[in-house]
Amino acid sequence: MSSRQGEVLTIPNAPPSLNPFFSLACESMPTKLYEGKAKILYTTDDPEVLLSYFKDDATAFNAQKRGTITGKGEVNCTITAALLEYLEGQGIPTHYLETVSPTEMRVRAVQIIPLEVVVRNVVAGSLARQTGLPVGQVLSRPLVEFYYKNDDLGDPLLTGDRLQLMELATPEQVSTLQHYALQINQHLTAFFNRCGITLVDFKLEFGLDAQNQIRLADEISPDTCRLWDQGETDPERRVLDKDRFRHDLGQVEAAYETIRARVLQAVTSGAAV
Image 1 (cartoon, rainbow, N blue to C red):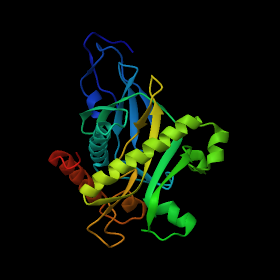
Image 2: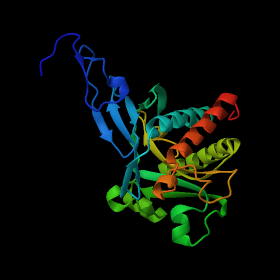
Image 3: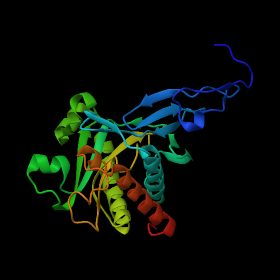
Image 4: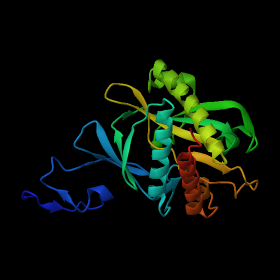
C-alpha cells in the first residue's frame, strides 16, 4: 500500500489510542502481538514496551461460556492500574508503566511463565468441588497452587513433581513465584479488607523482563479474583466478581462497578497506605 508523508490512517478494530489520528509519518505501525480472552497486546516503538487493551469480552469454564460485560474493559483497566501501582509501592515488581486511555495501559514486555499461580484464603470454586470442603470455610493458612497455563489441556493443577518434570520454570523461579504470591496475598488481603471486601482467592501470572527479572503481569480485577462483600451474608448477593457471570447471578456490571468505586475510594483516601 502506498502512503504519503503525514497521511492519516484509521486502523480497523484498534484500541482508542491508535485511532483516528495515527500518522504514517510515525516510526512504525503498531502490530497486534497477541489476543487473549480479555485483552489484546500491541507493539509500540519501544521493543520493551507493549500496549495492553482491555476488552469487554467475558468467558468462563475455559471459554465454553462467552458473553460481554458492558464497560468491563474500562473497569478492569482502572482497577488493575490502581492495584499494580499499590503493589509496586509495596515492593512487588510488576509490568505496569502507565495508563494511556480508559481501556489501555503501557506495560513492560515480558515472557510469560506458563503457570497460573492461584492463592486461596477461603474455600470456593474448584477447591470445594474437588475436596468436599464447605464453601466459605476460612483456611488456616493461604494455599498456593500452580496450574499449567494451557487451554487445550484445561489448565490442569500441577503437583510439585509434575512442575519439576515439565520444566516450566526453574526450582528457583518456582520458589520466587510462591514467595511473591504470598506477599501479594498479604498486601491485597489487607487492602480489600479496608474496602469491606473479602479476598477469597485470585489468579496471578508472572513473566520475565529483558533483564530476566520476574515481574507480576496480566491483571488483577474481578475477572481474576473472587471478591465477597463483607456486608452481605447471602451467598449470592455477596458475590462481586466474575462468578456473577459464570453462574448467571445477574447484575454483573453493577458488581464490577462496586469494586472499582471501593478500590478508587481506598486509593484516594489513602486508606491503602
